[in-house]
Image 1 (spheres, rainbow, N blue to C red):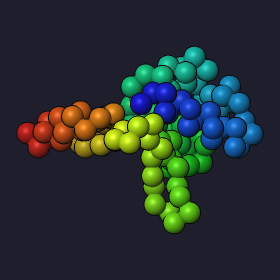
Image 2: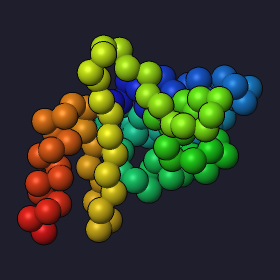
Image 3: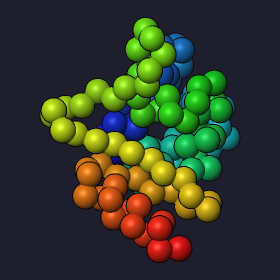
Image 4: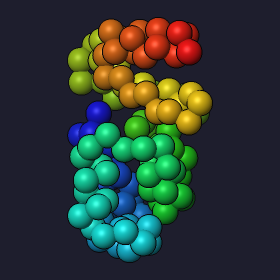
Length: 110
């Protein structure tokens, strides 16, 4: 997931004509901190800050919109998956169906 996020943020920055250092400055964080966020398991608040600085929605950090406004992922394999679930101030990120089902089970047990 982190490669998807980092690539998408770099793409959005390029589209807006800004460098990653500038994005970090807009967010009022050090470039190293932004890099760790993009390459780690970011908290929802960090994703929201990145999205706000880029003037996009959080979902836009992970996918592209098609012409008919349906959000679609760009899978690298026919059955690839990236999901984000935010429930009771916790963020669950899954890169495959088994992880997604596991997160749903955890949520259902709460």
